[in-house]
Length: 134
Image 1 (tube, one colour):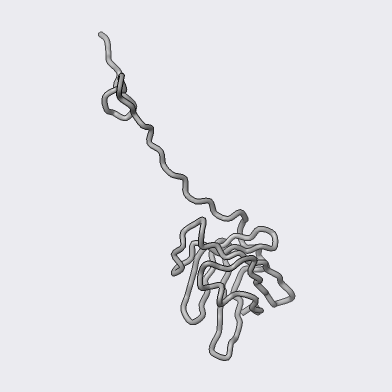
Image 2 (cartoon, rainbow, N blue to C red; image 1 turned 180 degrees about the vertical axis):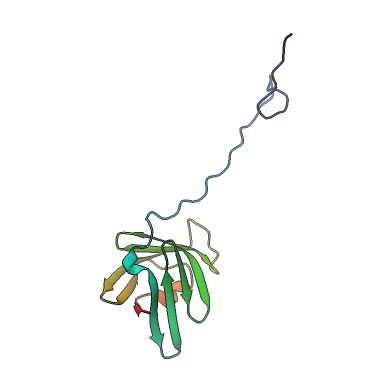
């Protein structure tokens, strides 16, 4: 008994004049390099304005920003750089939408200094603020 083989895709085998394209999925955009938020930065950070308060909560891989509205997303830390991305409601997909900041910590005071213009509105809230542990 002789068995005829079928093509990998379950359709007829490729023959002269026929081309079977392999299934190609596009890779997901790369996250910024870095790892989880270090322990000394995790927790709640607060800045008080005359018109209210800004609260930044940093967890291992996510952040939440509460001010006039709210925002949340993912975060990575690479040395003294902290990158905020995949934010709601910013909705700018990777590789865009990354807010890159230099972080410095002095006692209970955290400062975020922009490394470039943040493409999301959170930059207006965070740039060059001194936040204290809440």
